[in-house]
Image (cartoon, rainbow, N blue to C red; front, side, top):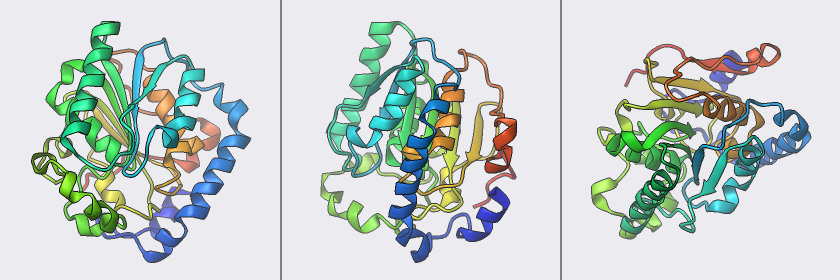
Length: 267
């Protein structure tokens, strides 16, 4: 339950504990097992209308890592595409330009703004693009994305991130105060977990506004992309028609597994 999970995780902006990090793999595997066992129920989630949705992978991930999420969303009637840019090694110039090109192409082809779903660093990229070109983005949904990270050393993946730092575009590094960390002018939903073992959970959410909401689910960082509860939130949000900013309301039987909204985030 959320109030129990919040006592197991670290303080909002603290580095996750070594215990949570060590349990990332088994928890992510358990979440994938839960996905397989609930596949039939996921077909009952709210349906899409064929509007375009782009799914962006997390750091060190590629389109294979988001295949389960894209399969579920495609089965619900969304026009879903992966990013097609290979492995996410951070904010390189070619990656950022590729995301921009992909979204602009979909907008031109479909004639409507696209929805962006980003896992971890992919969500930071999604928010960056939505901040720069809100007219091209209908909604942003992030999964464990540390877009309000105040210190890179607080993540458990910094050592790996540093290995690719020489490839990164310094003008677009992930940092507080950048465009991804500020409130967006489009609807956004931040999905996070109190027991994230990779990034501080407080960096993955923001205070609720008319356009922004945060939803906590029990889970790991590496399992959020195939976590059935997270998928429930993603599907519900993507099914909303343009201009509908109603808040996420969990199914009555599962309400105790979610925490929606909450107190403003303090730095």
